[in-house]
Length: 390
Ligand code: NAD
Image (tube, rainbow, N blue to C red; front, top):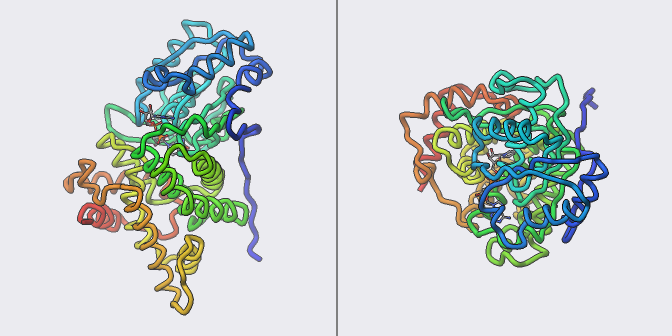
C-alpha cells in the first residue's frame, strides 16, 4: 500500500436534526459568549419564525446579549467583512454567530480573520496562512449547501478586481455548527437546486481529487447516494422533511470530504464566474461540472466508472470508458431534472473574458487537487464547451 499521512479536520460539535436550533442559546452561553455579532441578511432577519428569529429567541432565553449585522451579500465582498469588523469593535462584541448559507458563514469567517490576523485579507489568500485564532464562532446553517458551516474555507470576493479568493485554514472552522432541516423547508426551488448541486459537486470533486483517502471516499459515496435519491424530491416538494433531512446529511458529508480531500477545476473555474458575474455559486458549479469531468476522465477512468454505479447507473457489460461516460450523462440528467440552466451564457459569461478567467482559475487553490493537470488553453476550451452547451 502507498505510504500516506494526512490531517483530518472536522469541527468539534455539530448539532443536527429537526428542532436543534433551540439549543443555540445554551451552547453560546457554555462557550462563554456574552455578546455575539449575528451575521445574516435582511431577508433571513425578516422571516417570521425563521432561523434568525429562532436564534435570537434562544439567545434571549439563555440571557445572552447580541448585536445584528444584516447586510450579508451573495458572493460576500471585502466591504461586508469590514462592516462586520467595525460593528464588532464599536459594539463591544466578543464572538460571532453566522445565520444563513455559505455567504453568511464566509462573511463571519472573513470578519473573524481580519479581527485577529490583520486588515488586508487579500494577503491571507492561500492555505494555512493564519497565525491567530478567530473570535469564537458558531454557524447556523440554512442551505444544503456549501458545507461552509463546518469547513476551513472562507470564500471572499474582492469587489474592485472581481476576483473571488479563498483563505483556507483550520482556524476558520466554526467551533459549533447547527444544521436544522426545519429551517430549510421554505427554501425556494431554484435555491434548493443550486445549493443541492453545489453539495453534489463537493462530493464528486473530492472523489476524483488527487488528495482523496478512504475516509473522504466513504463520505463522498454516501453524500452522492443521498443527493441522487433526495435532491429531486427536495426541489419538487420542499416541505418533505425527510428529503430535506437527507440533503442536510449529504451536504455535511460532502463538506467534511472536501475539507480534507479538496476540490478541483469545477470550483476553481466557478469562482471566476462568481467573481466576474456575481452569479449564484451552486449554479456556476453545476454548469461547469459535466465539461470539467469529461476532461478529467482520462486521468482516472476507474473512479468515474465507480461514480456511475454510485449514482445508480447500470454499468454491467460496459467498458470502463463507457461506464465513465455514463457518469457524466447522469450528472447532466440530475442538473436537468432540478432545473439548472444549460449554458454559462445564461449567467452572463462572455468568451472575451475566458482567457483571464482561465489564468486565474489555474491559480485558485482548488486547482491543485484536480486529477488532470491542465493548461490555460485547456481551461479556455472547458469554458467554451460550457458556453456552447444547448
Ligand atoms: P447564499 O448564502 O449566498 O444565500 C443565497 C440566498 O439564499 C440569500 O439571498 C439568502 O437570503 C437566501 N437564503 C438562505 N437561506 C435561506 C432559507 N432557509 N430560506 C430562504 N432563503 C434562504 O447561498 P449559498 O449557496 O449557501 O452560499 C454561496 C456562497 O458560499 C458562495 O459565495 C460560495 O462561494 C460560498 N461557498 C463557501 C464554501 C466554504 O466552504 N466556505 C463552500 C462552497 C461555497
